Image (tube, rainbow, N blue to C red):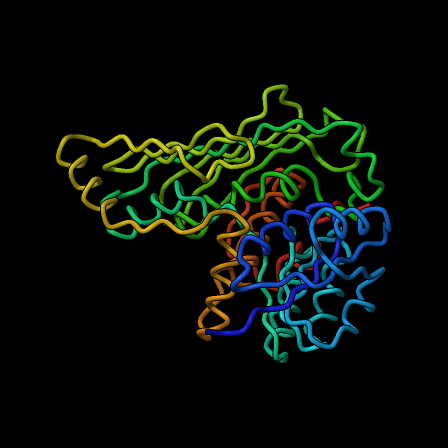
Length: 356
């Protein structure tokens, strides 16, 4: 059996969930250090989550000799240089969303990973919910048939408490609003199930909070397979929900309304007819569930490293997600539809931020 991977977690907001999730896999991981510029957050993790070592910054963490993996849960504007630093140190890096702030930056990380001994895994933990995994299984088995129409809703609530963090709600530090920091996971599931996007038309506005970035957005999407999708996202919903509904030739698949776990069970699979129902039941009889959310992604990460296989989420996945983000922002800023893929010659390749 491979030895445990020794992990340091940087940024103890969502990073506390990383610590907890690694600790659910004691045969694969050991969290040896926690790092945050806020000493109170670090002390809390050491006391309540059974981590033995505190670090004040990334440099101090990287000075630990027997460290294998660094989880970066820091503000988005720090990710590019921190990912580069971890890769340069010879460690593996796991990085929260959004990975970086442009397609140029993600392409730079592709080159950095290619030259490094370590590997880089972006976080897309929603992919490992058992509901979405079942749908992927039906699509891969051919049972679902052709895709027709998909709707993706992200209706959450964020207010003064959330935006008390000085880096949030600002283009220069958060890099975007509801499209980037909140709806990204749900939009990633659209591509995870159906594949690449062909074109988008988007509108965004800021109506809920006194911030720079958008907190309401809608978009119409054409997928590369010819099917259509609609996206809606707001931070002004007093009842928080996330909902995904996929209409296929042979099945309509719908998530629950759980705002932060739409990919998990329960999901509803409604067949076109009795024959389709039997085919769905037979296909799902061969479905083997795995662990979900962060635990599911981290378990598959350890397995992939041990076997030398492709990571469960790759930089190519992150680029696809950021390409959609770039297209959505560019469309909303220009009032024009945007066709994908986007290359280095696209005007938003180096930044989707609005022009001053």
